[in-house]
Image (cartoon, rainbow, N blue to C red):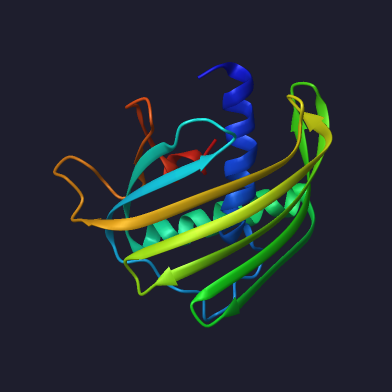
Length: 173
C-alpha cells in the first residue's frame, strides 16, 4: 500500500473509531465480549484491511481513555448517542497531517449484534482534500473469533502486514 493510501486509511480509521473517542461515554454503551476479535475495514476503493485484536474489559476501557484524550486535543465537537443496539457518533476534528491541518467532519453508525459482532458505516469529509479525496465512505465490521491465542495478551493487535503492536503500550508514548 502506498504512503498516500496509508495516510488516507489512518485518517479514515480515525473517523470510524469515533465510537472510541468520546469524552464522556454513555453508561449504556454496548460491551464487546472478551477474546480475539477480527475487524475488517473497507473503503477508499482499495482492498479490505483485516486486523485482529485480543480484547478484555480493561483493554476496552484503555482504548476509550486513550481516545478520549485524543478527541479532547483534536475535536471541537463530539457527540455519541446510544439508541438501543446502535451507537451514532458525529465529530468535527482538526487533524495535523504532514501537509498541514485538515478539518475532518465525520458521521458513523455502529450496530451491535449482542456482544459478539458489530458493523459500522461511516462518512468523512475533509477540507482541504487529502490526497485528492474530499469525501470518503468507509465500513467496518468486527466479530468475536474465540479465545486469544497462546502468547497474545490483551491489547495485542495484529496489523494487516502481520506486525503486532499493543494498544495499551501506545498510551505511554
